[in-house]
Length: 495
Image (tube, rainbow, N blue to C red; front, side, top):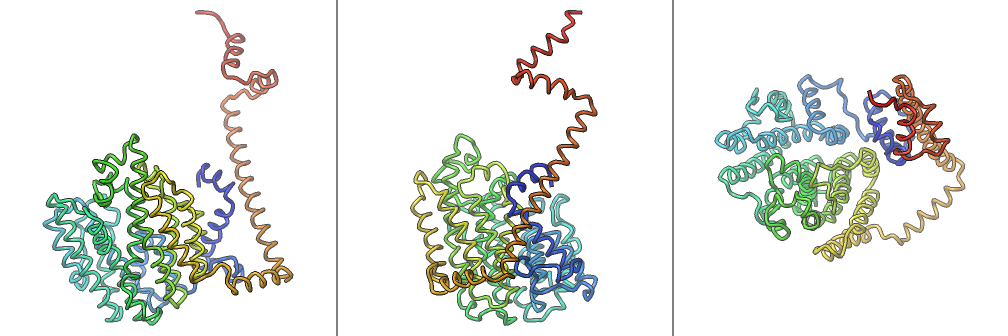
């Protein structure tokens, strides 16, 4: 944690508290903290725990790769119900391997195309691995040691293997078609339909595959299988949000996913979005992209209502909540055209904590960030009305399932009033207050120690604090006045 982070969290204590709560809980899940040390009402407790002591060597390697390829997904996957823990971990790694081949621009299309189209057959080949990625490809090592993934994949239930294989086949074909168009010099994403198709192949299919796994394991409502649009929206909402956030990074890597049908309304050439003189046009373009993504939000909440097992709910809800938080961050944010922007670690931890309770809490998260989008929306934006309607649609959906003035809300308010008279409840709130105070003292202590060290180093190398104090007493605050005094006192004339 750098000095800038310390200063930030010294005035955002709730985010600091969330970081401590989340990471201490992760430490607990690794059995380094006793359950009795955690306040159940304040801290996130994993519903299920992975048991590394009972795992084979190859499975441990798979979970190591899961940590390396995506720490955020790894955390929620490792808390899944034991029935789905390994199948979903392997599902993720298989699709990550497929994606690593697709993303690698150093692999010629003649080699890449059959790899993508036949990857569903490759995962059935015992001992297969691949070292053809470029040296700078970040997940290269996963494919080099992919035989560990295949070894564990061959051990899971046939019904789960069938689902994973089917999704891998469809995704591989979709990716291959996209790469072929790009290799032929054709613009890959021209219309919004093209954009939806691409997002479907790389993310919508994941939503379909996960739903089949959830239902097959009897941990979700079977009716979800009959609502493919809800399954697809779960993937599209995540993918489209990431595409907006990563626009600068993708452009630097010579990749472009924003559809011409949208950006051509605002600039003549896609690269014009990154020019400072086109800032307003770029913001209007990005807001239309946000609008396109936001249209999936209410369907994601509808889908989450069909998940009946807590760990499965957490697994699905956390990425969606993080996505809506990211969407609020990138909305009309000029920084996305300069760098890759991310929500703060504190906000991420707070969002994850809020998303591991129930649908009502997740709806509150959506309501909060959709409200931020509404506040940042401006009448100068050509999409002002459509964005307002999209925000209203999400808020109306939330209101329809959790009315703010419902009898239940009144009962909850009455219950809170009764709790205020409960000595135990009062003590818990008092403890929470002191938690905040202790964290503030801790941060101030760190700042004091850093300041002391910096002043000490300055003194050690010869800083004259006595002269600075004297000048301040004499009222010489301006730099030119101080320089004049120094010149008068130490001038020795010309040599």
